[in-house]
Length: 238
Image (tube, rainbow, N blue to C red; front, side, top):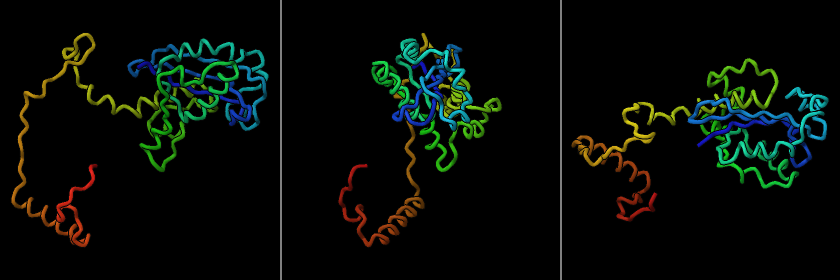
């Protein structure tokens, strides 16, 4: 599936409270490789950025005054994103803003246009529980050079996130990494008939069987004789 790494900058933190998108950056991946077919928009939000937001992205209200409004780029953006897997860090935030912008121009919600949305923040929290999982923290942990990131910028952050995502998911290539072009026919991996292989059956030794029985006895003792295998009762299926 074609993948698009997406990031936004906004006038503040609340789409429901009236804050708007001021910048959108998109980076395309095909077969996990950067294609250079990217998109970048600055947008006039029809309102000023909050002071705290200005400190984050540094995009002045004056700079945005002559930029197009979201409605002017909505069709181009949605056509570009159509059917792709969209990769976003803290997806709920960006999708909420995109939904609000689409609603304001009379278009359906964001997810109706795309194949799926993948949240790299959720992925990172699962992989690194209890650790900092901001984009900067992940860049440091995964050795992605973010030295040029003095302020947040949608396109720069999308480019960094693309590298972070590739490193986060590098293990997903493991099963195919050793397949040579000789094993490929028209881009399809040759199937291997596993019925030709006979797997040996290794039986437990007397010592291993005795050790296993001792563990069962200890468990039975700890449960007060109520283990299911001693009572002959079938337990629930896992």
